[in-house]
Image (cartoon, rainbow, N blue to C red; front, side, top):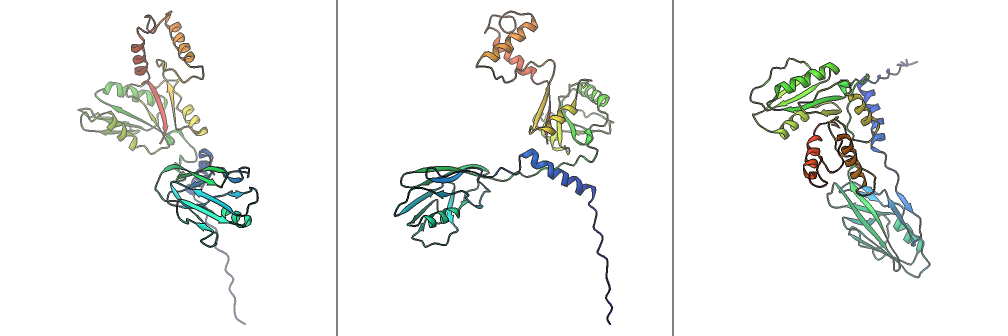
Length: 347
């Protein structure tokens, strides 16, 4: 009698911490992006066509079936239906003679038949092919018969690609946020800002881009200091600093900012984590930038103006002058004061 060896099944591999974290992030990502998209909204036949009202999407240079196409018009000896696209081509998967369906693979598809059942069978298998490379366009497809015309949109775009940042199981602030700044010939301002950061956020990484003539000696282990050619410019420095960020969020500040007990980066992060916003900011006390108002046209602006006058003890105009006299300078001052804003953005 032959021997039969029974081997126990191999033990299942336990998922690593990184795999578990990525799985959790992939669960949260669709919630933020509103995925999956809602199914196409179909209009019931009343034109006499049934057709998709919203939700038909195709990737560039790809093909999809068009759902919901249907004819429910009055009886006729011959049914003739024409579909027309502008950014793609139309076809049908139905295997029918060429004298029934004309224009396969072209922008206009013509269906001619005496059978209502065959017409609806062909319509149920109509496809749309994107033939031009567009990142985000909408093609309006028309559906016509002798007495009726219906139009519906086909959106051409790529699906949202997930961007996953693993802050670790503890989700500490230092693993979520990096502070970035650009400085030029203001070492005293920069050092004051860094000291204020360390007072309230001792382990938060700060990235500094400096195009001053003489580089600084910074011994802080949580500061990444990058030198640039002299006078390279603010935009080049900003791009350099942002390019070194590896966390999910970046907090952009000027080099003369001072952190205090009222600075709450955690609150800004909480807003970004719980909403669909990509950028949030905290207005400084000196900033009087007016916010968008739902008031009737002109009323919100006047209310903001009156409030500013009351705070300054003035009765009319901007800056104490007759209305209109100092308005240009006041707007300029508002624009200048609006620079004092901490901006936290999604990387």
